[in-house]
Length: 314
Image 1 (cartoon, rainbow, N blue to C red):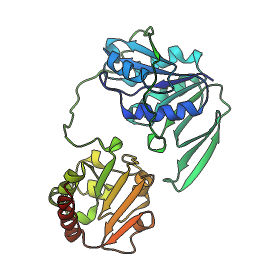
Image 2 (cartoon, rainbow, N blue to C red; image 1 turned 30 degrees about the vertical axis):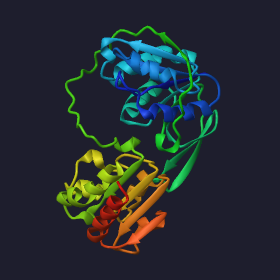
Image 3 (tube, helix red, strand yellow; image 1 turned 180 degrees about the horizontal axis):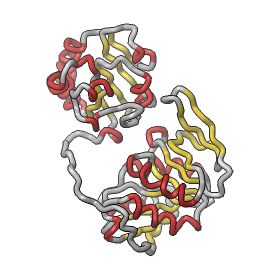
């Protein structure tokens, strides 16, 4: 079985999502080729070539691919599709934008957000906000699959795959890139952070995120997240949201502060390796999934935690 994995990258840097999606691609069996589509994207291609299990890296380098416009990237995938039994991408904003177009053009059903590869044609995916797991068997000749990267470990390095250039179809021109506003931060990116501390509506306002959560996050080198309730209340930006309609994360440590544990939030973080919950309501649903729970007033618990971390040299 030949598998083509669409790499996620910034031309210069390969996203960790690629290494996680590669785990799923390898589970299908057969050779895995990685497509790096962009402009001046050789650094990302070289990084992909070092990943364990990559048989070949294909680079599509053209001006219209500089910003990852879905219409342009889809054309490259479609041009290559005849050589592959499966086309895979991480279930990120980019992957979810590109692969449905490919599936529609190939007239096959997309298999979305898989969390397990059972066999080459059978997969598991969450439904009902993660409360049920659906087993999907596809009879399509070509599989088009997005991978929930939180469910798969990142493969390591150690590979030495050949890097080969491929021809790029003529520009579609259906959309154009206008501008991007990037938030600069010294903190880890939320979906790839090893430690995340998230706040909920219990914080009361945005200033309390800065006053109580930020010092602890700084000491732990953690990313900061939030529940939808906190985002909807305007406490923090939208890109902090963890949950079914936000970002799905699976860090080594997830600390939920003042979060009741609505089912939509749990769907975005329940795969975390260790979950710690701080909430003054002992009956809050978050305690049902937490490995460690502290029933306490967060406005007292967080300063105490910060003090203890300081004593420990963090």
